Length: 296
Length: 245
Image 1 (cartoon, each protein chain N blue to C red):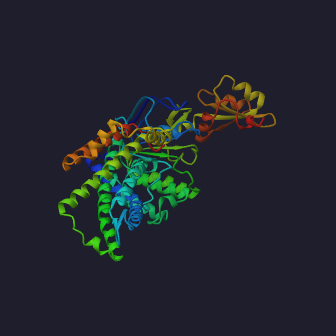
Image 2 (cartoon, each protein chain N blue to C red):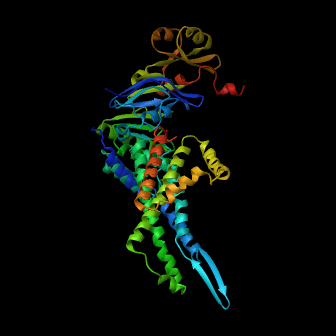
């Protein structure tokens, strides 16, 4: 069963096209990683799914209803980002109490335990929290709300490495105990990789790839060898990335589908796997030029 | 996991209670303004003097007019304030839709008007007390109002404050539609004040319609009817608004 369906969803903001006829379907009880470069449309997509923004055109269904202005969607979708401005008249513990009143499945025990574990002070104000602390608090809020669909928009922003690890573990444990649908957007996949089941890569407001993580792990291979040989050999293949790695040595990443690996090895090329996060980086790169070209 | 279902009524009730906490700050400014108005009223809001020969009479007027005036200004800006981004977004951190958020806000404006109207009327006793302490005992010995008069006065004050509050809420909601309106609307309103001829028959009949009504319940119906229209218009303009930008 799909809990999210988007059909030809376009969102224009002024003259900028944030989403461009996007089609996606998200299955119930999966954790999907939403991967894309800055400005690819990740936040726009999540805000539309949460019912906060309206698409310019196209059809969106979340939990089988149009999310915009829908009470059902608001009550069952938590949208967590780093710009949650809780009112200054409420302390952190009062915010959690308010959450309990609004969300029917709210888990007070989990909220309290995580609150204590990350050593928050009950009388603190949300505005006085540092960036990483605020992100951690928002994450607690999002997990404790225990909504049917939880959308995390770059949840680990500002968190230090150990909190990120804790965050991943907390999320995974709670997901296993109470399966639900989660979409987590991020631009660095490596730290999320262990969590995710599916990966949705978007680029320039269009879906590029939506596959289980295992497919992405085997999506491409790296070939290293003499430049002329590698460049000549990959001309008829789908090249994602090439780089000169040394004197007369070239590294090329090609789509692994239909590549005769044995032959490549016989020709003297080194074949290496390409991690899922690198695949995403190469896929979302602009096709021509890199940062080096700016300084030429 | 079971879906979290909540009826509109329950949700509005929850949001309304939440607003008393989240918007508590607006009452600080109300108290500050009313205290300021009481201080301004301490010397009397008006004075006339007359003398014949060796007798001179000075008349000082004491009233809560200043306090009510200040409270109306507060009601206007408070309503605009709660339509602004940061206040509006409070709702969208929890469960809401535009209808329930507006309904809860409207209930809050109603209640805040009652609180503000009552404190404004009751400030009359503070003004009397200040005069008494200063030795002006004559004022406090004047004929007290009958209970009916007192209630009519308090109710009318609340209605005026509510009316101004509803107007502020509509203006605030319209301004939120596009950021250029932040400039356009105040300029248009101020320009209107300068250019418009307030002696124009339309204005005079409108003024009479609202403020020269001698039958109290008719006056109350007119104000309440207008307030509901203003709120309905606010809900209509903000129902398509995109939030948490």
